[in-house]
Image (cartoon, rainbow, N blue to C red; front, top):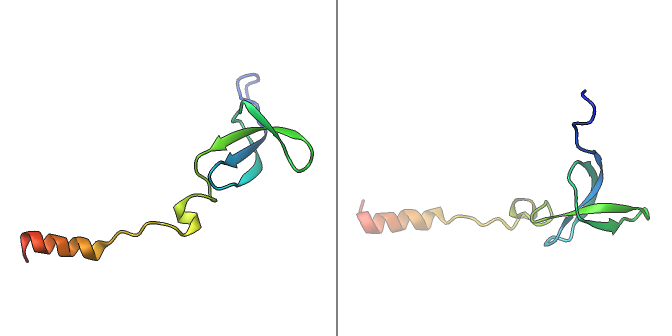
Length: 80
């Protein structure tokens, strides 16, 4: 590996603002803010919009499409 061209790989806290989930992992992402973690150390924090705590696929709140209603609407409009 060539020296001096790779970003720093360090522990970072990712925080989901809507779901309330925070997790510590290693990443090259950087954040302007810091947070004190449960181990007493201070880590940079990156706020994310969606994670497994707030994504509808993982939470089971996925919106189901009403396919039967759409088919009936098509049949009413165009016959058949």
